[in-house]
Amino acid sequence: MTPPLVLTVAGSDSGGGAGIQADLKTMLALGVHGMSVLTAVTAQNSLGVHGAWELPADAVRAQYRAVVDDIGVQAVKTGMLSSAELVETVAALLAETDAPVVVDPVGVSKHGDPLLAASALDAVRTKLLPRATVATPNLDEVAQLTGVQVRTENDLPQAAAAVLSYGPRWALIKGGHLMGEAVDLLTDGTEQHWLRAPRHDNRHTHGTGCTLASAVASYLARGLAVPDAVTAAKEYVTGAIAAGFALGGGIGPVDHGWRFRP
Image 1 (cartoon, one colour):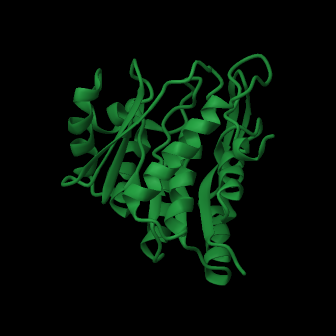
Image 2: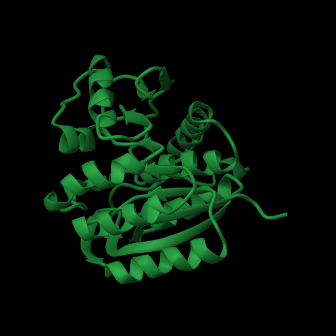
């Protein structure tokens, strides 16, 4: 029996903690068949991003069409789209795809390295976010896209409204950078779902954003409604953070296979 089919459109992380590598590990862990469209190659490790090389738009388009036209897809997740040209290319492809889309508007790496050109922000707002079933920005990305600064969880509804104004059906505002427990807000402008989890004393959190977005896409492909998919994804990534491990000399990754460990 063929498992649900999920496609990630994102950059490669040579250290294996984030990007395409994290996406595919998450999809395997959650029982779906992961497929990939590579948008960029990065030289990356636990200390940071040491170089990034964007793929041509034609290469991205060809990968996407090869997968979707032959194999099909039941959910799509987008990650690192470093330029306006790539954002516009992927948005046009998504417009032709009848499947839920999770947009992780990757702006900076865990180490603070820029992964999205400033000139691409308007394309993200006007072309990509309107295609999203769920948009999953962190607080830095909310500020980058909307100008809204979130300092406490009381600011999360304003941030969500600002993101929703660009057209996604749902906004998941990730409050992981706040103090206290890890609180996220999921809303479509009518319903509000506050998702809370204990904050684990673990600095090895590389790949959390990629992992969460891929988990949401995986659960959507498995047929869950958005609130249920996000709740299940939050549970999965919380466990992955708790099991995160040291790797190299800097920030280690979350453990995508934590449910399989003895």
